[in-house]
Image 1 (cartoon, rainbow, N blue to C red):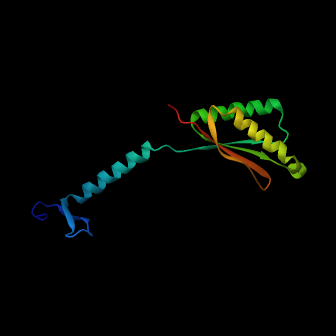
Image 2: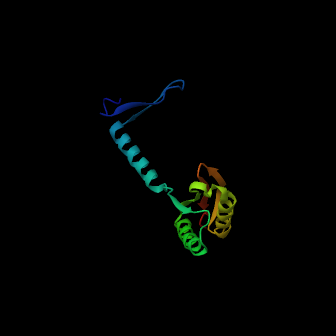
Image 3: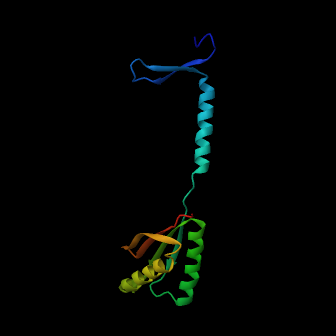
Length: 135
């Protein structure tokens, strides 16, 4: 029947008893499937991660400036990676770094939620903040 119609016989479900087959134009089917996949990919959103770097003894003005940028990133829908970088012997100020990141999380509470609490990795203390969903 498929040869008479100049189409392809495609096996849909080989495990069924009896196997399920369909007569169709296979090239057209592949084309439409690619098109459908492309549409789904276009609709899915890419998550970008923006970084903000602090020192353990960041000044108040610098903190406010960076907080404003973080606010902007979260409003755009980007994830935020805030970290405190400890140079040399400044690692002794771990508590100050943690306080700074927790303060940032508290200030940005209305724009995003904390994904992971501050964690010390080598010379960096890292915290992730995800944007809140828009209604």
